[in-house]
Length: 297
Ligand code: UTP
Image (cartoon, rainbow, N blue to C red):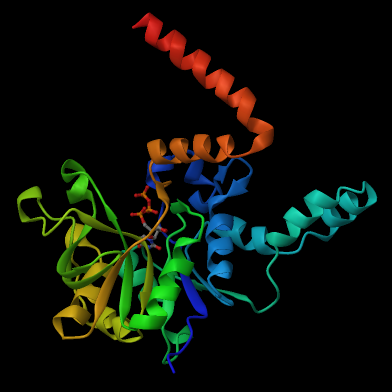
């Protein structure tokens, strides 16, 4: 029997420089799409995929994240008194049970791979998920759930894969595909942010992973890679090179890069339009604004 994936690592120790000055005092993961912080989308997706233990890799200045997941007795009492039951329910979704969530610190921002490695003592001999909250994925079936279901048949390591236009490919980790089986791909390896001429494909790795504990050993042996950082993709590629199965899953869904301003704004509009109470007013505003901009051009 394959071990179930019940633990997820959320690396949130990055500095979020692309959102300065906002991220000077607020963690990027607390920035909200409509009214829910990015981190809430990540937690909900993990829960729906069967995750029961949540491991946060944090750094200095991320205290607001810990507060966000704490109980808020005063606020709850006020909402109860005012019979605001809907808001109370919303609030409950953001509260984690004692012991459900743990925090480890990354002392220095040495890269995503290093952040994942910081959680090594909390992962025993079991598979685990990694979720980057910057990547928000709108999908009928949550992306990580799609991956967990595929993993139940394949085992090994699995990354979420997405086709990207060739001119954007060198901003991503790209898959070197061994066998294309439709939605599932078996891969030879991965290259982090290659020059366009060295790109092995236009299939990019995005922020969802299911990994075996061997990847943590690999991370411990790695030297700095692309951008002077310890790269998670290098440690996963080592698995493929040593003959172990590594898969990519072309997931169903729309991914938004909320680590970039443009992606964040696109997600804000898309999520707002999916809310019936906001849809009509926002559509009118967008039509009017786009119309008058076009007319002025
Ligand atoms: P990014 O590349 O988006 O970096 O990290 P960043 O620091 O968050 O943002 P910018 O580029 O300065 O605007 C991708 C993910 O990896 C985590 C980040 O928190 C984010 O979830 N990360 C990155 C770490 O936890 N530690 C690191 O050393 C680097």
